[in-house]
Length: 298
Image (cartoon, rainbow, N blue to C red; front, side):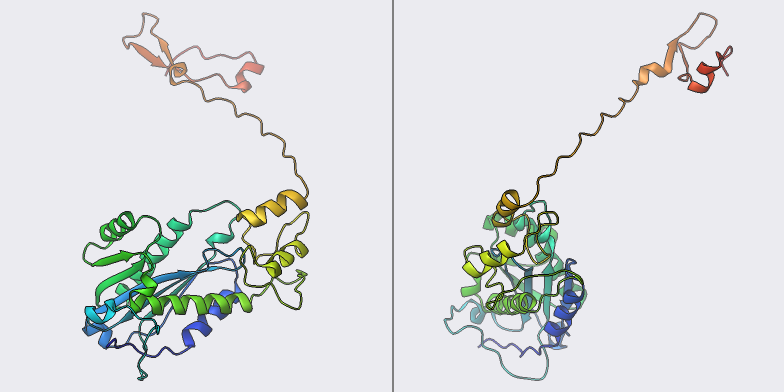
């Protein structure tokens, strides 16, 4: 039996309120850590939500609980079993804004960095980690090796479809998805920004959703592009920008004056000096304009 604790919604409320007040900034929210998780080894799951959509943030969740490894490895179709007791399990949520950058970013790198930050967050709060289960992002062996190099004292299991195999990962997946859905549904736009939202809202946020497509077409400004809920670097958004936004021609910057070679600062000895070379300074325009020149070397 997997012994986990029921999660109160305080962490969601805090995380979403803070993220909503400053969309565009990364945010990590932490729940309280129960004393038992500081005394007994916990099994940890990590998963993400929001990799595919063109709208909204990416969210990463980590979940820790006390259980035996055999129970964790049991495949289950019924999802995560949570026992209602007073204390909360350690939950950390990372809401990432990196996907909103205009330049394309490596989602695998973003995911790896988020996982490392979340694991370190548990360790910093005194959680005893027995083993970490992670849903793979990219090649499994390479990802697991990377985590083992960062945390050599911990055990890892990076696996495909880990959310359907390991209950802590299932829990982390649920928490991340709920947080992302809530962030998307309650998105706050900057003051003064007029955004068209139809009766069906902006849809699921996935590029293939007709409602999402309509939202994108109705909310593209020819100068400023999309509102801040849209991931500009996604192909769906960038294609619309190429088609409907105004073209801008930037003047080429003038080439910088190349730096002088180091040899120009030295001249050969004139025979009167005992040194093989003497240091010379390039003549300033101040002296050139006044026909002045240096007659002795200091």
